[in-house]
Image (cartoon, rainbow, N blue to C red; front, side):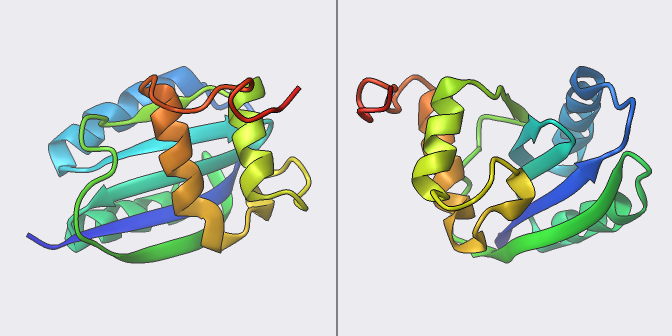
Length: 146
């Protein structure tokens, strides 16, 4: 089975209930065979999705007309050999000092805006966030960040 990953950023519409959106996405992703993670910061969504090319395309088409999103920008879309978030129908990455430190390592010149991320660093940043989420990643102490 061929797999594809999609990483995008979009603006979150006012009033979106993020926990409800994550729960809904997890249910949909399970049915569609998608896995991934969502990071939110202020009014930005930053999402990593993986699945068959057909399931990724179907979801992208839905996202483009979803009123909870605007200004959707595809940062990366490519074939992948295996899933990164295989155990996660929809991980919600909480923004905290550790996730911010990882963001700053991968995007040192970017403002603290998820839409400003260098597309070349998106997948490695999600890998670092996943390691942190699963308890195998660096901490602020490990990164010498204060």
